[in-house]
Image 1: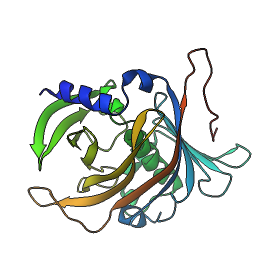
Image 2: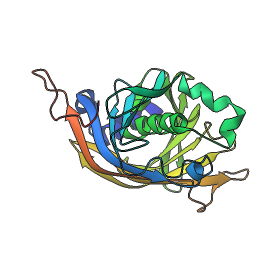
Image 3: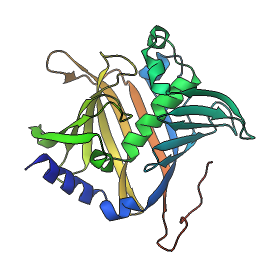
Image 4: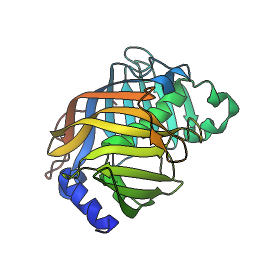
Length: 254
């Protein structure tokens, strides 16, 4: 099987291209935490948030971010925090570049956690369709522990964890594990993102429960502790573009 053939099967298993093209926004409730966020002094920044992901626009909003009624808006070009009147109270252009500073090895501010979460949520909730975007190239198919592994290369302009990532798929072509290096945290931060549950909403399949564990040693062995990141996504809803114009459903944010 070629990489593109495996990707085709995976896309079909997650709802197909035609339905995905009609997606305007994905809305949900998010809670997330773990050692990765505690180590950057942001242990509770991503608890009990309303999220809205606009996958084709490459944009994510976090409702009730920083404080009730406020929100964080992320795109690759800009991260901004707005108060309950919509006034910008903090913003950062080219926010990914801020992770290169030495202070970010020990401390993230709210714009940093917004940038990390925005890019991660866009990647996770747009899987596997993100793998067909410009700058993304499936490169190889392998096999690990009975699962097929799709290796993928990402160009520098794609807002994602790192340049080379692997996606492990079961016989139904559902994602069971996602391997990458979280370069925003550090070049040493190699992790296995285990996909523990998924559900179908609006005809599309989304992973709703994840835990990230370290991969250590020369063979990048998965170590089941500590939990670097845990993610819980609930109350999923999908707004679809209506063929007659407009959007079905009402966005939570914006």
